[in-house]
Length: 415
Image (cartoon, rainbow, N blue to C red; front, side, top):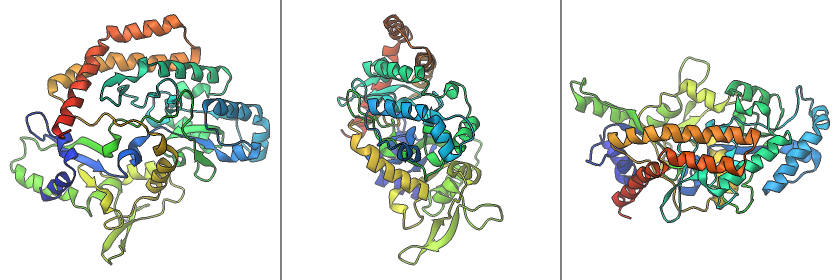
């Protein structure tokens, strides 16, 4: 598989992330580089956006800390009638909306500045890595507690959409497209509202100023198991030779985003030329279409690799990816202070099953208190009971498993 081997030779970390403890590669990966390190596009999922049109209308600056942000939401609430009239909005004004515990729509990116600044960036596992390479639970830190208290204060003042705990994606988007939001959360605000009226909300200072990057993000987009070759294959070498074509630099972008020259409503690409006069895939304009919906309709996904050095040679960088990369570099990278994120690691079957069992109770408990505490608040006794409950679900064993593979990963990388 010369195409895949070339990727592994240039970026040995991907080989390490695909290889088990006995040296076997069991599945073929999906790799999408869009930036790297603290400038990778995956550094932040639930990006927060603020309605710049409303700020300008009310003469408000872009908030830089949690106190200013709270005052801004209050101004949106108290000037709702003026905003509705000025912008001809049908429906009530919503200072801030989100979808709790829903990936890119989760609002807990706002609490990164509380306590030591860990926030809760890993919304599935709720872990973070300290600068001394210690795996911790982000949800039993003081910053998580203080952040929940602050979000509850916002909710008590009517600044957070009451439907944030129950609404589905379609409802969330419908209200956003109606122009009713002052602040919202998503991978790309174009999926919720529009680009013209919105800007990213900078990292908010509270006790500290920090953005905890998503785990796995420093090596950019990666998924270990996009394809497997089973014992049913009579000629596995032939199958792998064919699958290796998915890693061809000209084919991978088509698998990832879509292709060209099809007789349908939309083509992701048109054929063009690069600066050397060679054939290159050029992204077609999306127009008013939602980027995520177009890609979901057009892409094959599966095994592929798109490297940063392919852009401008084999394919253009998507416009929506480029402006998101610019946002990250300008708004977020300067405040990503940690040295490490948890990498993509290959666990044994036994440890994977053990971790899955532990995670089911731990994550369920954490996600439940996020919603409950933001809506209803909590006491010191509630906090202590929560921490004890996590301990009763063997949080120490949970973290120890992650620590085991973090240590093994860096040992395999030689540092």
